[in-house]
Amino acid sequence: MGILNYFRSRDKGSASIAKERLQIVVAHERLQRNQPDFIPQLKREILDVIAKYVQVDQEDISVSLDKSENCSILELNVTLPSA
Amino acid sequence: MGILNYFRSRDKGSASIAKERLQIVVAHERLQRNQPDFIPQLKREILDVIAKYVQVDQEDISVSLDKSENCSILELNVTLPSA
Image (cartoon, rainbow over all chains, first blue to last red; front, side):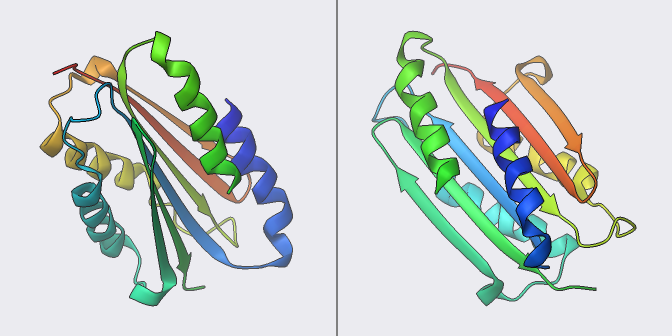
């Protein structure tokens, strides 16, 4: 449960920043390098899903895609408008 | 970039397990407790999106939702069929 602890520790410190945030991390571990990587398409679809629930400007979304040998990690950080 | 390091360190150790995996973590930090939480709906939509790209049985997906005071964390772990 290391990842949950990571988010929890961030949560505690964030009160002073006072921003509502949504963070999505997708990790795809492949067995072989030549297997298809659907992460880029998945990224677009997840952004579409988010847009259904919250109104966000494109500039409020930061996206990073990190590829190592057998693992793709997509990280989406969204700053949500405070209601 | 702590979260990327978390995934990277998992990646190194996973060669012996030899399973293809997809992990999705969604963290929603709210400013107020009484704000609507759309994570449960988001969960269903993300599962629908995954189903478009990979054929997985329901039993190959484990879902956990962890709620603290101002933060909801959704964790989806999918074991993908090896092609």
